[in-house]
Image (cartoon, rainbow, N blue to C red):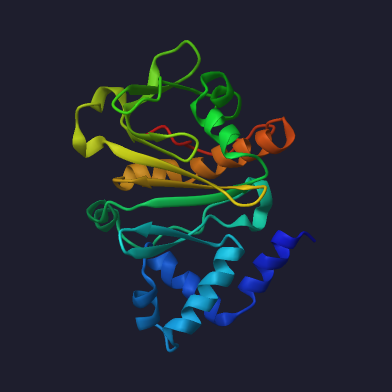
Amino acid sequence: MTDDMDRVFKALADASRRQLLDLLHADQGQTLGALAGRLDMTRQAVSQHLAVLEAANLVATVRRGREELHYLNPLPIHGRGSTPWPRSNKSSKEIAMDKPQYVYVTYILTTPEKVWEALTDAKISASYWERENVSDWKVGSDWMHRLPGKAPDVVGRVLESDPPRRLVTTWAPPSEADNPAKTSRATFDIEELGGKVRLTVTHTDLDAQGLSDISGGWPAVLSNLKTLLETGRTLPDPFSGVANHPKG
């Protein structure tokens, strides 16, 4: 059994940590204070449990201003073929009103430079994503996501470009490129952690359909990216059984 799997089973063995996961399943993006307020335990105890869950890659933490928001990470228990945690109990109307965020964290044995290249090089992105990411990647430039030589599935604009640390782009169907209601935002944060890279993908401003479309797709795309960078090969049929991979 790998060390990663040991951490997952250790994290899930504790009832309080399972309760935390249930709370995040019901309502993503909660602060430490909000979680502590729903449990019969101190903030320090909740913080310690969250640290164990984050070490097992079951929880992702994203800083927004002065707050740290906690999200379920798609379960790593299935290894490279990760599947998302069960869907929220919220209705489609509630999800649309929340403009929910989707957060996925993966750790890759590579360098930040290679992750950046894989995200922004058209040929490399086509090898693990089935689509090219095409742009000059300068702030304000357009970008497109397309089958090689075909019309784009997604278009957008580069909002932030700080190689090899951070990339932020807007996403929209080509027919809705000028419609703010149909435009979402994808943020790629790349952190070096002593011989490995922590890649955090945050997808925001999603309506209910957009969240449904990308929830199964991001794990497949990023698992294939991880496999490519660590082994030089891609997964066989990485999108088998995935109804939609993230195309806006």
